[in-house]
Amino acid sequence: MLRLITTSLWLHCQRVTALSLHLRLYTTLNSAENQQTVEALYDHSVDIQRIRKLKGWVLHQSPAYAKEIAKLLKDMGASVSTIAQIFAVHPEAVLCHPGQMQAQKELWISVCPNRKELVGIIEKFPASFFTSSSYHDNQRNNITYFQSLNINKRIISKLMASAPQSFSQPIEQNEVMVHTLLQAYQELGGQEANMKIWLQKLLSQNPYVLLKHPNVLRQNLLFLKDKGFSTAELLHLLSKLRGFVIELNPHSMCRTLEYSQDTMGCSDEKLRDIILICPALLYYSESILAERFKGLLSAGISMSQIIETPTVMELTTQIVNYRIQRLRAHGYDIRKGSLEVLNGTKKDFEMSCGKLQIHRERPLFNPVAPLQVDD
Image (cartoon, rainbow, N blue to C red; front, side):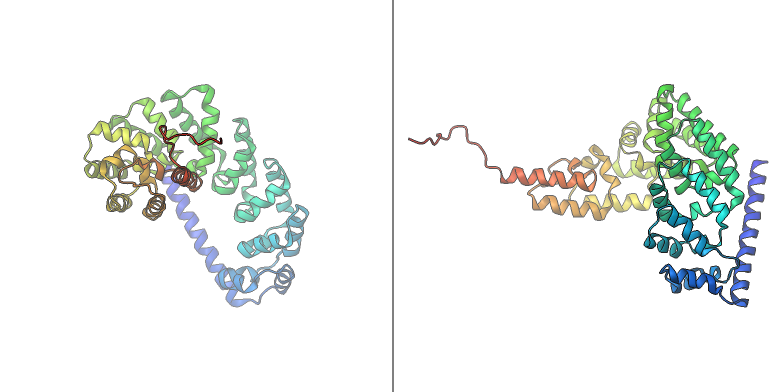
């Protein structure tokens, strides 16, 4: 029944999207541009040619509220250049009714620390802020729901910005998904005292997790359990994958695991150990894994080194080659040393290179050499 409803909604959205596109094209071809909109955008130094090329239909709409929306943004603290950037990226903003956007602003302010931060969010995610007023009730209800879970306001605003669909959908869908996540966490042995922090991290690192179907999570956990992972190990994977376990499916994981095991020539138990160290191996495709294995081996790195430090597989071949060259310039032979020096962020790697440089420049102390003292 749920699948039938979902399919019907999808077909309805497809028809609405197609009709909307047809109306936009018809309007663009059969009406002149709204000169008030064009002049207002010119006054705010917006690239009109870019809008004409990418979203020219907006310029043909009436009524439009370019001046009013610009004033709303200015009153919030947006600079002239920021307003121009928002209009250039999301010109549809000028079609939003000022009164509705005022209500939207107040809604977002309730979860944003200050107006300056809200302006930054709007500049980065304008489509998330300038939404249809028909979604405002859902947004308000979802904000109230996540606040009842004691979710940090910054995380709520991040969710609204980066995954607006999760706040536009009915509250019931989010309730079901959150319940499924928390239930899985507890069934796998998660401590209730840490549950809030765990959920906050997961939602912060993967906001789109709320848009997935709860059954996907259950199926993936069952698949991994059948592969021999304990409940504690499953909790570790669920936490370390940061919700990306919901992006997977048993078929893709099965193929990836088989390819990794065949390539590394390891046992089932050793493969599980490797996955626990580097869960990313679960969701990389066979083609990506093949490229990275080939890149590492062609650089002279042995398979035993890769098995010992599998997290090196998270780096692209380009990054690995660049870092190997840098290390070689500092006299470090990656074929004989640990691969740990390759891992980490760019900042971590630069610090490692700095330590190698200091080590090379520091003179060796000879304990039997005579001390030179002044007479």
